[in-house]
Length: 114
Length: 115
Image 1 (tube, chains in turn brown, red):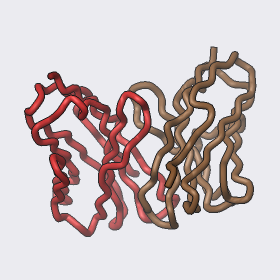
Image 2 (cartoon, chains in turn green, brown):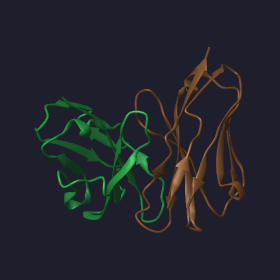
Image 3 (cartoon, each protein chain N blue to C red):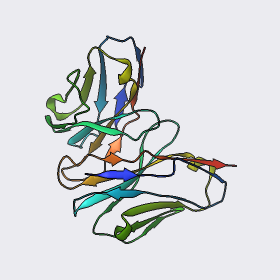
């Protein structure tokens, strides 16, 4: 059973560019979460999907951020017109069912905006 | 509002010493879940334990043990006979039954085990 995978693991971009990250959850998991972690802080919730439906978005998720989960499998997180403040680790997690099931995390995508 | 406080920013211990990581939480929900995750230098968050608010029984798993006390809203984590491989950042997290069930994390405690 493979775990949650994320791609790329590292991304360096210039301010103003768009970036897209991918997350592949554990295969039978129907819930998928995105978190952001800045240096020295705990992860902060961005958004989550149940199957293909995006059910909640944090106020941290500005209109430059968009997430999708077509067909309820992998998910993408896109950041448009990146800013230096977007530099962070972006973590994806998945869980099996509704309710507070244990979330299993991927290795993260570390973004650096120059 | 929900909140998780890990007052210890960094702890250093010598190998084989015991160490306790503190976690205090706030929530208005009567049903909630508490977690501990380990984040080694590689960056991936590793799940350690999940407890629900109705189960205050302490748990032991090998060198790890957890003490959940609702009266003090605490969920502390003890590592016995620490090893160098225990060096990591440890996060306590809270999930409420209502809502998105997303995790609210503390700021983490960086544990360094010195050989």
